[in-house]
Amino acid sequence: MPRSTEKVRVAAVADIHVSESSAGKARELFRHVSEDADVLALAGDLTNRGTPREAEVLAEDLHAACQVPVVAVLGNHDYECGHQDDVVRILRGAGVTILDTEPCEIQGVGFAGAKGFCGGFDGHALAPWGEEMIKRFVRETLDEVMILESSLAKLRTEHRVVVLHYAPVRGTVEGEPAEIFPFLGSSRLAEPVDRLGASAVVHGHAHRGSHEGRTLRGTPVYNVAEHIMRLKNEERPYLVLEF
Image (cartoon, rainbow, N blue to C red; front, side):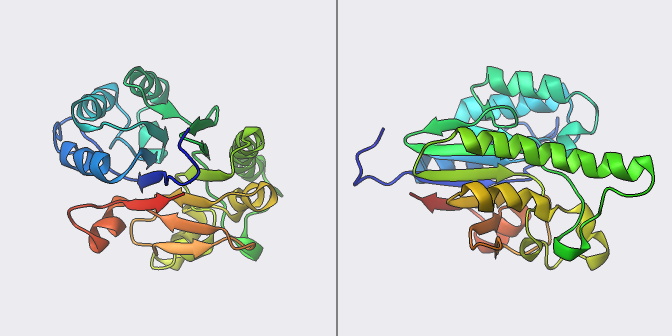
């Protein structure tokens, strides 16, 4: 654990969408992260279609170029082919800590995460009423909320970073078409953050959204989708948080 006078730098990026044909392309990103940060948080859509081979390409690039610990959650693209268990196994084999099941602590900073899911925001959130399919849809979101709540409750660190794929606040999806807001996240994901506390939340998914927002109680939320981060810095398309 670092001395109290030391800062821990956490780099965060999402939606890198590694494909079978992109071998080596993420290595420059990981080299820069290793220079600028002490930990890398990947906020979902690590692969393009969720195939085992894509996960292997990502694992190879991480092994070749990333010199810092990596924590991650999966995104919707990582579920596309139904091989998400293989994706998790391969990435864990490469040393990546997958946060969807257990939190972790690195250099005195706690990390908790979940993929998250859809449902909409604030007073426009979808309610579990009517057809069974609607109830199942909302239940999926609630299950993800419970994963996040359980993980956050286990952490005892002063600083805690929440890693999601779907957005927990409306503010960071602003810029996307309003018609698809309900499919970009759910404000239910912000509830355990505000109840249990966190230093920051990072997420992806909304490629054309806004970079920064806040929960109702003021926790900063950052959309770190690679497309958004490249608009800020083409060479270093990631956020660095210091604690």
